Image (cartoon, rainbow, N blue to C red; front, top):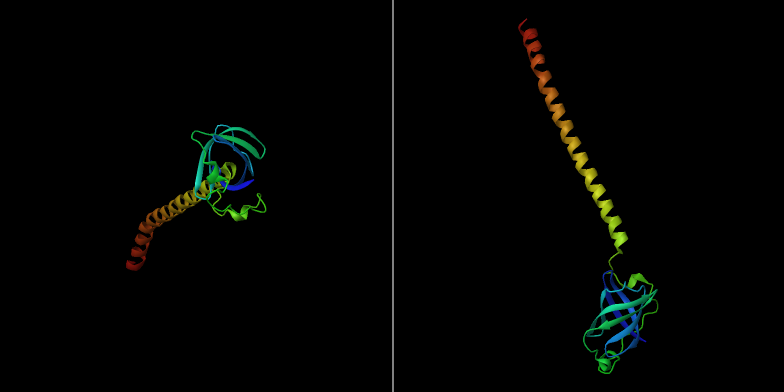
Length: 152
């Protein structure tokens, strides 16, 4: 098993390369990406770009277009990465993007807040305009009454 970092449409996560060949690899991750998705696997300074050809639960197989430098990936030219104790611990990856359903819910909540703020702003403007109009309408007769009383 070789420790690595995996990037796909849901963001970054830890992964383990279980099997490696010249044009493909089998990987264990927190959750397997969907079929057909392109993934990027980082091992030290090496990057492998591959397309997922099979997936089940936390395992998936990916095929690359170019040959993989097997010696470089397996640690022939650099020290192996430390192995993470728990693949399910999200605290390690502070740059993790939330899953699409959670991003959708966050977007929905922020749009509701913005809608409420706009309605409150328009209601406040309408109330101020109504107050100003009523004050202007009532001021003319009150000025006339005041003039009659003063001249009286």
